[in-house]
Image 1 (cartoon, one colour):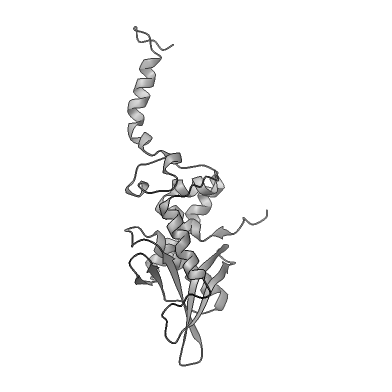
Image 2 (cartoon, one colour):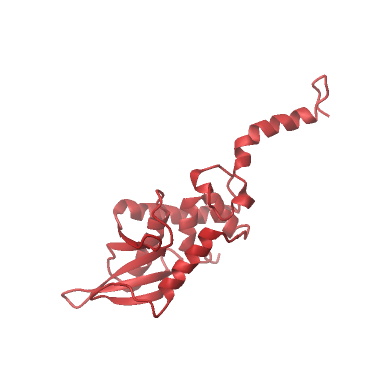
Amino acid sequence: MEPPDPLSISALNDFLYCNRRCALHRLEGYWQENAHTVAGTLAHEIADDPGYRQSASGARIERALPLFSVSLNLTGKADIVEFWPQADGTEIPLPVDYKMGKRHKWDNDDAQLCAQALCLEEMLGVKVPSGAIYHVKNHRRRDVQFTADLRRLTIATIEGVRSMLASGKVPSAVLKPQCQGCSVHSICLPELDVYAPGISIAYTKLFSTEAGEQI
């Protein structure tokens, strides 16, 4: 059997945000732009601009750096990687991901950044202890430590995405706080899950006789 196609690092972010959205994107091919997706695209264009300068005194900066991991079969791109010189002449890479909005309470952004670090570790043969997420909207940079727990979450997410894609099944809709503002909300229709029991009862009554027998 041939190995599966490389998994996009961005799929991990999608999966942790909502596994159904990940499936709609990657199994069904559904994609819709909204204000959030357009803003995210603009944020990454800023990071990829060769003329853009980010404050990182003393670090060598690489933009739009392609990433891969053979062992994890991952592929992607880092917005920015800062290479910080060490006393022994080596460099420690520090991936920086750009996000338009403020920090959310979910771990999807951190796991995506950690996956970038796992790729860098394999590519360069060095330990990557931390990274950063730059929130463009409020001009804040947040440090992210690649702890053992975050690494385990990232690996588990990789396995979860692969399992879902291999099954070919789209998870059922579940109404969650993150549904508000989701780009595929109009396709997913998670509100129907809330009303599903009532709809089922109404459907049963619609096709029932007065004696209680179903047509």
